Image: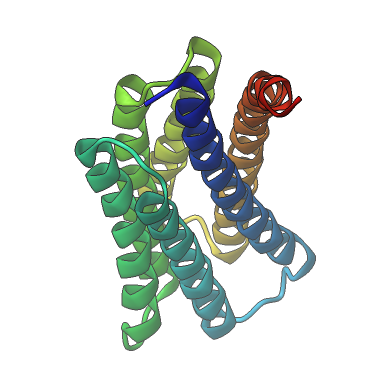
Length: 202
C-alpha cells in the first residue's frame, strides 16, 4: 500500500469517527438543554427522554465501531460501549413502574461502565497525547458523574434533573471537543494528500 492510499484511508476513517462523535455530543447537549428548560418534567417523560438519549448514543457508537477500520480489540470495546447504551435505553424503556431512584441508578451504572471503557481506550487507541487526554477527560467526567449519582440517590427530583442534565451537558461538550480535534486531523491529512494528488495529475 502506497502512502497516498494509506493517508486517504486514514482520512476517511477519521472523517467517519469525528462525525459520529460530534453527533453523540449534539444529542447529549440537546438532552441537557431539555432538562434545564423543562424543570417540571414528569417522571414518565423523563424516563422516555433518558431511553431515547441512551439508545441514540448507543446506536451512534455502534455505527462508528462498525464503519471505521480499526484493530479488532478496539472495535470490540467501542462496540461494547454502544451495546451498553442500547441496553440501558431498552432497560429504562421497558422497566415497569420505574422509580426516580431506580432511574438514577440505571443512568449511574451506564455512566460508570462507559467511563471505564473510555478510560481503557484512552490508553490503547493509537492517538496523540492531546487527543488521548481529551478521551481520558471524557472517561473521568462520565465515571465521576456515575459515582456521584450512586452516592446521592435520595437527593430529590430537582437534584435528579440537575445531575442528569449536568452529566449530559459535560458529556456532550467533551464529545464535541474530541470530534473537533479529530476533524483537525482530517484537515491535516487532506493537506498532505491533495498536493500529492495534484502533482500526479499535472
